[in-house]
Each structure stands twice: as structure tokens, then as C-alpha cells.
Image 1 (tube, protein in one colour):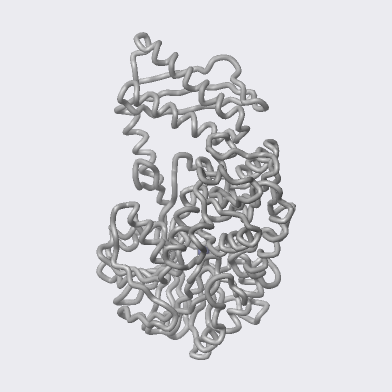
Image 2 (cartoon, protein in one colour):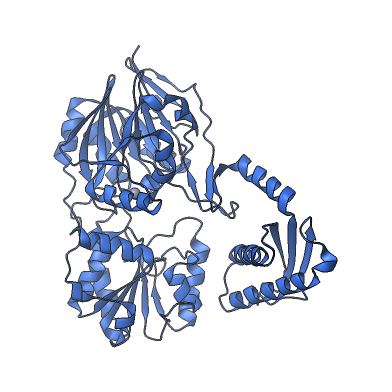
Length: 550
Ligand SMILES: [Zn+2]
């Protein structure tokens, strides 16, 4: 009997790391290829990518990649995955492909990119794919209507139903309803905000907020948001223009995104509206808006450096910083520390806890999600792009619409969903989906990290630095202790270890004024010691830093 399988190679129950496989007897279609973000205990890991071992023996079946939109959790793994799977076409909207091209060019290669748009139809083996443009927090987000031998699968990656989008056109709900009338077998839908009541407010609602915030700002007006959120920046620029402020782009990711949007005419502003940082110094504070990268408090981002005093821009009295962003879970402490520090330095801060209208999500709430279900009227529902609790909330709202429990599929990580044309579903097949971590040394899974440590230990030895810190002041208590094994002959290396201790003190001195978190201090110490020992000895021992808080 004919069947279609769906597998998530980034794992079901994940918000990021999006990569879905649609598979028939003959063909495979891949939807999205995104990165995930490491959790706190994965120290030294830069990012996560989907596990493509399932595809290793099926390469000749793959007909191509379709990218739903340009967010990094949907395109960011292309540079790691694409080269392993051969020369495959990558389909996406103009803006999604522009960002994917940028990402790939950082790695020094290109790909067979093919632009699609609403109304276009692709024929890829057993699959025919049509596109519906929807609204989200990035331009030209697409929903996929995938016709298969057993029926239509509607792949609704991230979206909300914004009736007044700041960029692009509103979602054509007629078009979606027409697909619904053709009969849809399964709707795979965004579920991230299924817990929230009502509709998600439109992006354009932020214009009033920017207007209000800029009016009460006597100094420089800083706006930080997700760097990919071009419509958010568009509104901030428009309000600035109206209030006769020039705009300065600060931070690589913000510069890159806005410059690309200007180049491709997604944004249309006169060139003389923008100033370089050094030009801005000649202008009074009250005539400047700064769009700054680093809304999540990321270490090394422009905003973090400004606050830490390591940037040519410093916080001054009268400055206002608007955090037009959500806190990504796990980043709260970093963001709050940043906000505290800005206030200590005399800046004013508007952030979601005190100003609830400062951010709107790009994801639909329960009413958006229900509306899509009602338009599509699918046989089966598959919540994606959320954690398990979001999937459960989605299930509840679908049950409220009369869906039977066995028609709403909540798969576990690694489970393969096999749909048959007679409407039966088989969930018994399981594939191992591992967490693939990427760090400066390359790509590996958890097992490889252990092996790498062993290899370093055997060839380069180990250095353990034990540091006792006063947890209130970050002051060193006593001298740091350094123990080595298999690295240098201690008796002849007293000077080296003494210098290493000085190095530790230097790093700690830097953090004293920053009042940051211990985990960041730990990472920073590790990095400095690695560099230090490599410069001095040409070797890279395994370095463990142990901080004892007293
Ligand atoms: Zn997205």
C-alpha cells in the first residue's frame, strides 16, 4: 500500500534545528535545514545541526531542499549538510535564498539555488509542491502545499496571520481555503504559541510604541532586536526619519541584514539617512538612532561590548535603549545583567517586563493556529516547531475543534510517522537522532567530544586551574592554583605557570567591572589559557578551569 513517511532530523519536540524529511518509496524531499542552539552544559559548543545519518544510504532518492524562510533555525545548517549530500537544488523565496547564499559564501561555496514564489509549482519525483506566502517575523515566509501519492500535506512552518504586515502582502487566506477544499491529508503546523489565547498582534502595532519611546528620549535612541527582523528595524528607521534622527548601524549582523535589504530594495531609504559610527560623533545625541546587534545579551555582540566598555560607543546619560525582543529561554540572565549594567551607567531601558507592548511575536497564538486548521480541515494534525508542552497545548485546542485524539500526532524524538493511503498511521519505526554539536574544531556528536578529549589528553596533557572567587565582588581569594599532568616538566616551568597565574588575574580583572555570570567567566578563562599556553609552548593541553565561589 502507498505510504508517506515524515521524519524530523533535528528532533520532534524542538523549536529550532528544523529539518524535515518527506519520503515515499522512490523519492525524498527535505524541508528546511536549520541550526539549533546549545544548552548551558554544552560548554565550548557553538551550535547544533540536524543528524543526517538517516539519509546516508538514501542520497540518490533526495530530490532537493525546500527552505520555508530565512531564519537561521531553518537555513543555518546548509553549509554543514549540503556538501555531504551532493549537488542538490535548494528552493526558496528570494529573501530566504539571499540569506542562505550569504551563509554559504562565508564557508566559501555556493549551491544550485532556485527561486520560488506564490503560485509556482515544483515537480520533484513523487512530490508536487506549491507555495503560499504567509506572514512571520521575516519577509517572504512560505507555507508548502505538498501533493504526494496519498494526498496533500500542508507544511506550515513558522507563521502568524498578520492582516497588516509592515513588509510584503498579508496572507491570502482564500488561497489557503482553496487548498482546504481540495482535501488535505495532514497539516504539519507551527505550535510554539499554542498556549497563548487570541490572535498574535500585528507587527505594525509597534509603530505607536516606537513613536512614544522616541518622543521621551532626550539623548541617543538605541534599538536592539533580532538582527533578521527587518520589518522591526524598518519601523524604527521610519520613526527616526520622522523625528529628524540619522541612523547608525552597529554590529555585524545588523549591518549585514540591513545592507542586504537595502541592496535588494526590501528597504527603501535615502543613503544619506545612514551614518558611520565615526561620522555620528559630529552629530548631537538627540539627532541619532542606533540600531544595535546583541538583543539576547550574547557575549561579544555589539551591545555587550558597548556595555562592557570595550566598544568605541559608550553608554551616556540620556541614552535610551529599547529591547524590542523576546527573551530566548536560557538567555534571561544574560539579558537582565545587561539591562542592569546599562542602568548603572546612566542609560534608560525599555524592556518587555516593564513595557509589555515593546515586542510582538512572529508566531501565531491559539486563534491564528485554529484559523489555519479551520481553513485546511485536514485529516491529521502534526504540531511542529515547539517543545512537547506546546504540542500538548496544540492538541488541546484541536480537540476543542472536534478532532479525535488519534488524529493528532505527537511524535517522540526519532519516531518515524508512516501514513498509509487508507488513513492508518504507523509509529513503530524509530531512527536514532543524535545531537550533533559544532565547535571551533569541527563537527561531531557527543561521543566524538569524549574521543577528542582523550586524544588531546594523550598527546598534549592536561592543565587544571583552580580559582577561588568572592561571589559578590569577583575578587580572587588567595592565589590561583595550577596543576598540570603530561604537559610540561613542572620544575623547569615555574615561570610559565607564574605567567599563567598573571593571565588569570588579568581576565578576572576584566570581569570585575562587568558583573557577569560565572559560566561566562569560566568560558573566557578557558579560552585565554588555551591561547596563552599555545603561544608559549606551541601545544594545546586539555584545560579545565574550576571556580570555587565563596
Ligand atoms: Zn522563523
